[in-house]
Length: 158
Image (cartoon, rainbow, N blue to C red; front, side, top):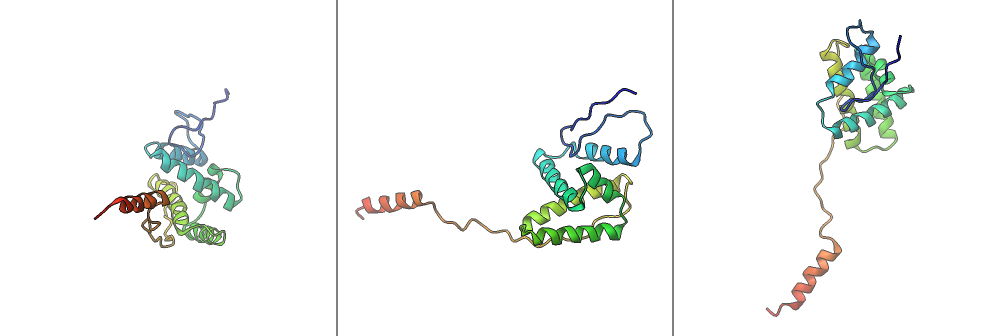
């Protein structure tokens, strides 16, 4: 059987092997789902999902995003939600910001949702991420801008 070249298509989070007309294994279905369902995402979103799934693979002590996806797909609902809680706790321990934790949890939930849509899992991740406070820019003007204003005021005669 000829070897097929593995490549990471645009919008995919894992490299896939092209297939056509084959009966697909569960692993192949997971990989193809990741490829097909993320092909329409913004490249920045794909990069964020890639980073999140790299870190999830590390947390799960597996070697790749695809292996992490297979672990997640093999879980029952309770175990998957428990794993998500553990991952959040680990990120808090490592002092990641609430925003980072929420983004990474969103990547997990987004992919699991797609797995549910195509019938690979019957459940969803129900864990809520930590609250994120949106802060406005409170740094004030830069030093150069402040000096310019003071200079303009100094030159005025009124």
